[in-house]
Length: 162
Image (cartoon, rainbow, N blue to C red; front, side, top):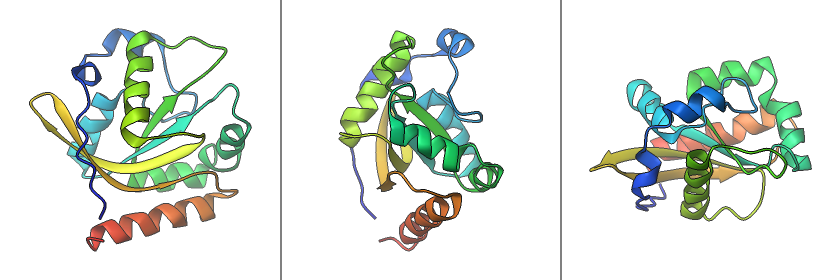
């Protein structure tokens, strides 16, 4: 299992309540706040699956949403296996500064250079800082079955410790 012990700045832990009221993910059922994803992950024991996307300009991101993320079978799989986090980098719409800073910090931590990039990971929190345990990454897949089977393989490898 690959472990990244990158600590993110305090800004990731700021309360995004105000931003949350106005800003929601492009994809239904996805969260936009790392703190909220962390809390749900801790309660459920599920890893976080973060979608680094350019929702309003990235053609492959739009295809991934249309072919995978918007499908009922994906939503059912996700409910059983992961906590969904959308980290958007739009060009034509504004997102709250706190969310933009959070997304940028996570983009740097994971060294994301292209979109869509999907990371599956666990988080630990110590003294208002997160430690990231990366389980694996993927990108575009043309179908729900192909996408979910790839992520399932990551989760199986992580469970075996390798």
